[in-house]
Image (cartoon, rainbow, N blue to C red):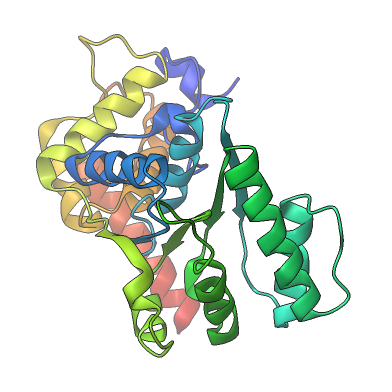
Length: 278
């Protein structure tokens, strides 16, 4: 029997997988999602979502996809790891991703085939092609330059390719090294960690989403304070710590996670890290 079923839950509440049904709509995340949708629907071109590790960028990306449920006129494509060895490999991958009929034999061939495809899809068929790139901090200068060229394809009214890059903050420095790239950014948004109140709301939201009745909770207010102090509001860290707390709750046959339990887990993790790095 899974630990969560012993707590009256229907499923795992604190998985770190990017499940849109567990997407907590903090003020920062709601603004990011809303502005992204607007930018895509208006076909503005390049949107840049920046945030530190564990701020929920990948979950935001999956939630964005879920907000366009098989809508006519939108074609979404996603690159999970943009670590390509060459320009040609990158453009060939895009050609296959977009299902471009003619496969190019060179970088120039691929670029021209993609351009033709985007014009046909965007103008003749009236479709909006969206390319989403996760782990954008892995984009090389060559890949960024190729994206800059692709973003030049446009009509008088709109960009033919919509690009959304989800990346860690370090990408900004690389972008500034590509001539005129920053000028292509129609939307730049930095996703911030949660504050203490939002940390408690996220924990309760995830528990409710996993089947816990609204009137119940499994975390005391002082436990939430300890969790926030340790995680600084980073959703991934919150989920990991809460998962460990619930497992401990079951093993110790207790009914509530309190501050001493959380502090004990934090000490154990700090001790483990110290011994591992020693």
